[in-house]
Amino acid sequence: MELIIIGSGPAGLSAGLYGKRLGLDCLIIEGKNPSQATLTEELENIPGIPKISGFDFIDILKEQVKSIGVPITSSDCKKIIEKDGLFEVHTDDKIYTTKSIIIATGASCKRLNIEGEERLTGKGVSYCAVCDGPFFKDKNVVVVGGGDAAIEEALFLTKFANRVSVIHRRDELRAAKLLQKRAFSNERIEFILSSVLEEIIGENRVSSVKIRNLKTNEEKKIECDGVFIFVGLSPNNEIARGILLLSDNGYIVTDEEMHTSKRGIFAAGDVREKTLRQVITALADGANASYSSFLYLKEDV
Ligand code: NAP
Image (cartoon, rainbow, N blue to C red; front, side, top):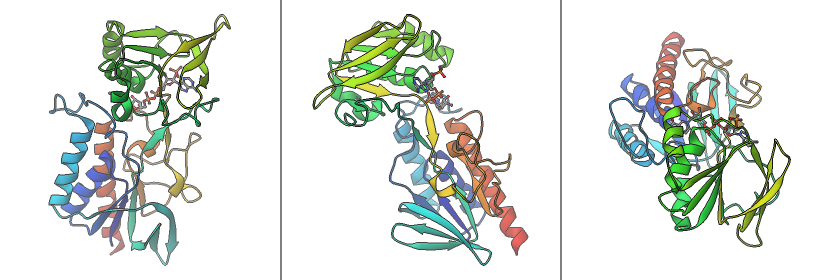
């Protein structure tokens, strides 16, 4: 194999598309968790496509990649071992040998690590409004976070929930102004600012949350049926640890051409250190990573 692409989100699929068009013998290994893009209800910022669901976008892209003959297999990649100038990719059921690798494993939602969070995950605590929102028809839910994800998902949840309380630790949101404007004018959304979630309460299901106002230190309980947590992402970097240079936050350090600290291994998308984590930047990363792999393989001949 000339190129193994680990990950099948926008970055990995774009890498597959470009890799194949460059004539590389490539394979995409898809992990068990869906990409962040798949979980996004609506993508409105892909130039040329005014509106599409994240699921549909990935589905179309995957079909496009498959249709040109890029194989996609599902497996959990465990480790990479360098051997005689080649790389071995160890998955849970197989070992693949390849000349180059693109790591496009993305990022996952961060946990708050507060009492009740782990115990009640799947019992009212969720990290995916698109997946779980419909279960909260006419119920009251809490959304934690002030970034694009939190505000976008809060807006989505108003399709089902009776009341959506957004709890954010500062008195100003981080989300894009357009999203903020929509959320502020949505009467089903209430904002509880300068406040943090301290505990999620419930016997077998979420029944309430305890919050604390950071300015007054006042604590209060809010009755609710669901808690949606969107407090940022952490990189899925397990496969890169110990072999590649990572940033302080654990993202893979690359240059503009997606070279990592190890020749022959490239990184693309949310897993790499960069400023703007969006579908469009992931798509571009994938294309650049494949092109760099192509140049690397040409040098190697
Ligand atoms: P983010 O932009 O990092 O925002 C995380 C939010 O959670 C921030 O408001 C942050 O507060 C808060 N937060 C972090 N740790 C917390 C904690 N321990 N307790 C309470 N609050 C905490 O993350 P994101 O919204 O998941 O977005 C991730 C990336 O995806 C971003 O680059 C974003 O632009 C992109 N994205 C884009 C779209 C879109 O374009 N439509 C949609 C979704 C995501 P502070 O503000 O105080 O730091």
